[in-house]
Image 1 (cartoon, rainbow, N blue to C red):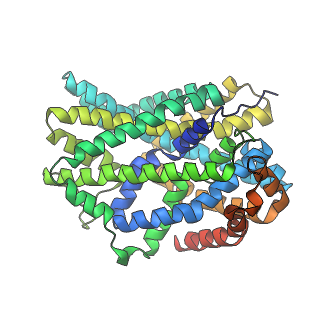
Image 2 (cartoon, helix red, strand yellow):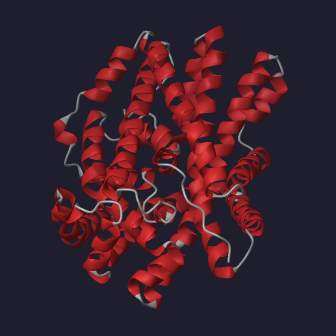
Image 3 (cartoon, rainbow, N blue to C red):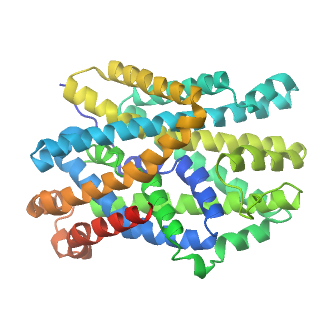
Length: 443
């Protein structure tokens, strides 16, 4: 049995967990959700739901993880004392593997567009054209490159791989977003974008579609339900105060999502001022991959010499964001295979990377039929349902005294805190009911 790793510092954990949460879900997904769901109204609902629903579930994962010091399958088996827990763990393991399979394809596109900024600078037009045209060969090659980079980091373990790289990559990510916001703010049209992003249309706040989208975004962007936070929680030192750590991760995640929107939405309006079409035929802002791979590159093209540099920085940012998330996703199945099946870390990492890359390849060859389907099944349906089951385990199945005992390891006075007065009944009654109602409304 190999010795389990631990995060060596509080900052290391916060940046790694926030890195897991801060990925394409924040920098690509969140602004496009804002664009498609009424602008600032979505921002408002997302922030409320992130704290009202996602934070309590995040805490459940961290507490279960540290108490059991185990991977998701074994941890949920211990907490429930029944096969139902282990089956739920396997469900999370499979869900996160499928999420990583489609995620790696999108990250591969980011690498291709990043390299295109370099090829266009040196005048390699044929290469630039190939890099920006969607072909199965291009998708498979760059997906493979991304998976190899992810595997290389996870191979180093917790402190020498995940923590070491998160502490380096996260500050660079934040710096690049801020630099791009400052630059975009100086361009014509940006002020209209800031207005659309920051002034809510309150008539849209209770729109069922908006509420469901905001809940899905909160779960997806915080990596909830699929075991990433549970596994990271299992690497936290006993001396750490879990409620504060969880709040720090939630704040960093929400903060980066919101500042990413401050970059993307104003950039769309700058594109509009430069003659780039940013609305669909239905009159809504273009969202999804069309935004990142059509609207924004068209904007960069209108910027002249500065456009290549801005594009270079932007796609570098997207690759970093993707990596900080993918390493946490791969760690979920790796932890299980190493601890439960006795594999070495190297065999587990490369074996699982090969399997997930094979799934990505199948999706690439059947893109029209499978890509959207896999995203819907995993992020819109499986993740919220897994979140619901975790609420049941933490609120109803696991003994309350065991939870308090775990929290007291790093916070002796927790029993008298506001967190302990609210969280146990909240995770028991409020979170499961709200998740189920919103899940039902999504149909």
